[in-house]
Length: 232
Image (cartoon, rainbow, N blue to C red):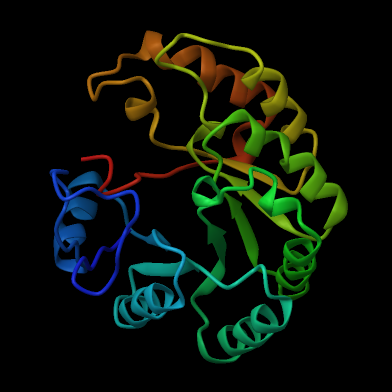
């Protein structure tokens, strides 16, 4: 994520947070070099087209940014269609869409007919949809999305939000395995140290959950994501 707290209001970012400031390409590039990461994707952090334009502007001038997962108004299929046509024409680094589902009062927001229609437009353009899972209810929607919009590639971040802190297992494990049954679904290995409740999470805290992902998704449908700078 690149953050601009002077232009955007991030509902999840409190002024007391240690990362409450602007985060720019100049901050990220040294971290990439130290970690041996050659390229990266930028992911939206606020449901606002202004932020998507902000990310696309920065992606356009940095060749180490390969793409942007931005935001479009999925609840309005007409406006979504216009935005996707514009991005397909003008922004070759636009790769897909995310919406912060946990901010919606309706836990089933993503399964609404208007949203599903917009997701069909995403599929028609070849863009992905990142399902911003923060609980098992969101994770349980993935099979429905895969069935209702079969051409849509879906990405689950944060390993589907497993209950690592509590050392829990069900119902997350079954919902995760069910999502993995659909070959158009992939998963990100990210944010696990936060889900464990501490930065110093050790292998034993995480291995059971990572093994479950390897067994259900397989390594070719898994990717690593830094969740930078939130991970700081």
